[in-house]
Length: 75
Image (tube, rainbow, N blue to C red; front, side, top):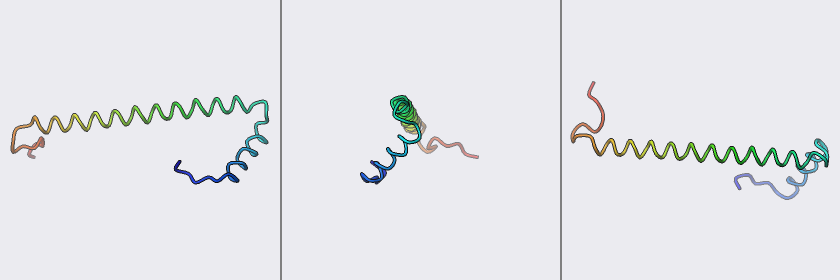
């Protein structure tokens, strides 16, 4: 976990959340946070895959280019 949150800090956050939202709405808030986190992970995974694929495509283009050109045009 990238954040160094101790047990006291986590407990304080939970108490504040309980005070703000109340016990009745806590499952709804947790579900919404879970959906948001899931969507964020999916988006970052898709972005990582896309960047990796584009980098691999660039490598293939470099390998397929004629020797001496290096895949770049002379200006």
